[in-house]
Structures are given as structure tokens and as C-alpha cells.
Length: 348
Ligand code: SAH
Image (tube, rainbow, N blue to C red; front, top):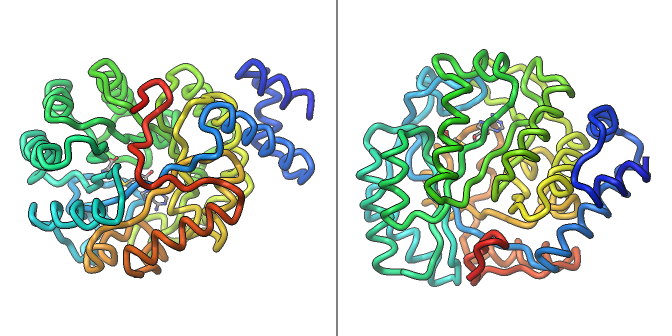
């Protein structure tokens, strides 16, 4: 197995059967070696740096019906909110004062936030803080709408493909098409965003062969960011009684992604740190190099409940930041808060 990992490290891909073995591996020695090589790869590109970003969850109103997600339109029990634009700017100001230079604005597919509205918000932020990086994570739009967002100063866009299996994708996302998801990603790449995709580990009926398809997609598409997190149940969704995604499989898939897309910005996700207490650290030790800290107003945090247990940390932003920095430094890495945290092909 070590030989397979060494070859993956050198060449960026391996025989599908061998990748499958690594996806499935429960052998601690093998997995430790996989993480070690993923860390070596990360170090070659990004040194010891871990980028810290601020996350602002601006709306939990959503027209979609994703069966795993707590803010799906059908969840009548979700307490809906939409931040006022001034509240969004206030979160950016607060984050800026704490040293953040990169922000992610994420929300449900809320019709209020049209491409024009999002562009206007990004432009207002960029006029005030021209040097920061803004990422949007707002779902599917047309080519022209994405173009507008890019022209307004949006640097990056996150849109996970969720699963590369068309059949599984369409069974968990009613009235959505896998083709359109991928079209959005390709359009954004062409438009020139730093573009992020990724998938959920542990959706019901997902097989290891599907994760192999996810990795193959990442190899071919070479996104700038890859977000991988475990499925986490939410009590008011059709998947309320589905088991959480597996920790080891999530970490193996993160490490494999690092070896397959070496320059990618890979977050250690909130879902991972909700799954296990030291999830954030484990993600970093499997090759992640990004941490996103929640800067949403406390009232919004509780309501942006994609899954149960997500909002158990309502600490003050400064404490959250200090805790994250300590944790990152505790495992021997360098926490960078004052950086745009660009992909290595973009640079500051
Ligand atoms: N509307 C945006 C943002 C979606 S929320 C969009 O369409 O991209 C961000 C991510 O959270 C999703 O892409 C999904 O992968 C993840 N997510 C949502 N519910 C989840 C759950 N129950 N468990 C794990 N991840 C979940």
C-alpha cells in the first residue's frame, strides 16, 4: 500500500482499484502514511501556512429541496431569516478589525439575493476594502449572472458538486440536474473565478465507487478549492435517521484529494468538527489548509442549521479566532489570518 501512496504522491493518480483500496482503508498504519504524504504535498505548495477565513451566513431562505439540508424549502420548522445589507457590512467591518482579509458569504437560494443584489453587495464591500478577497456560496445562477458577480469584484465561488453520481445527485436534489451543477462550475471556471467544489461523505446509498468518481472529477477538473465533509443528519429532513458520515473515510478522501489536486485550498470543515471534537485538527493533519470561522450574528448562527449540532459554538469572534490560532499552532502549523489566502496560481 505504501508503494501505491508513493506513486500517487509522485504522479497524482493511480489505478482505480488502488484508489478504492485507499478510500476504504481502515488500516491505521496505511492511513497514517497516507496523511503523512498528503502533508508533505501540502508543505511543498503552501509551507506550514493554514489560511483563516470569515464566514457570513446571510440568509437561510431557500427554494431548493436538498433532502439532507436543514434549510430546505419544505422544512416548515426552520426559523427563517435574511440579514439586512447593513448587517452583512457590519460583519465584514467586525471581521476586518480582527484582521480577517478573506470572507465567504453563504446562503440558501433566496430569490431576494439576485445576481444584481449580490453584485451590489460585493461592490460595496470591495469599494471600502479593495484588498480583501470575497467568496460567494449562493447556489446556481446563469452564465451571465455569474459574470456579473465576477465583474463586481467577487474573487471566488463555492459550489459543491455534492456527488458525481448523476443518479444519486438527482435522487437527493429533487428538481435539480447534475448536468446543470457541472455546467455552473465550468461556466465559473471560464469566467475566471477561483472555483471550489466538493462532496458530502455518507449520503444514503453512496458507494465507494461513487467517491472514486468524485476523485476522478477532481483530478480532471482541478478546482481551486475542494470542500469535503461528512453527512450530518438534521432532525426535520427526510434523512433525519441516516447515520453520520464516517470520520476515517472523510479524512482519507481529504488526503487523497490533496495528492490528486496538490495546489487545492482544502478546508477542514465545520461538519467535520461537529462530527468529532478534534475534527478541525484531524482535518489539518490529513492535508487541509483552510479554516472558516463563523462571523455571522449569533441570532443567525442558530438559524442557519444545515444539520443538528452545527451551532454549538456561540463564542465571541475574538475568542473563536484565538482558539483556532492556538489549535493550528498546537499541531505545528502557522495560522494566517491577515492574508487573502489565494490559490497558489493566483498569489497576492
Ligand atoms: N446554497 C449554497 C450553499 C449550500 S450550504 C449552495 O447551493 O452551494 C453549503 C454546503 O453544506 C452544501 O454544499 C452541502 O454540501 C453542505 N451541507 C448541507 N447540509 C448538510 C448536511 N446535512 N450534512 C453535511 N453537509 C451538509
